[in-house]
Length: 163
Image (cartoon, rainbow, N blue to C red; front, side):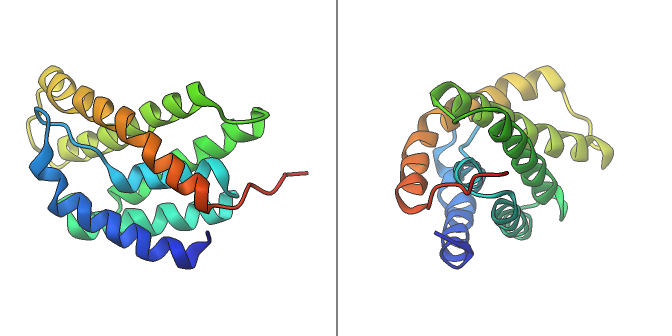
């Protein structure tokens, strides 16, 4: 699965993210399909391909949401670089690593959005935001990462070994 198959998949995920996902919120949290696709792909692919997916997915999210342009791109690029560094250190990415990467990815996406909201001059209650938005988002993503990872793993070629 290369960049050509990824583009329509990311467009579909971004459309689902902004149309259907807000209807299935738990408290203030919601799953992030684009982030989960990028994480699942970055675990299996080279850094160059993962960066393309992160950039395209981030731009699509930024264009379709009210976040400032570049917020999702920055978050997804940070996540992809973190995943690449971890993948280089480990022999393989297993169950616990995927859970850790998903939690780190969700926290990164939420905290970048939160930081940009604060820098824009809005008043944010940190404790309420963490308990009402971030924790339910992590719970949603913990459940949804597995079918997304299975789908990407099924259609993605294995990573090229780095020498």
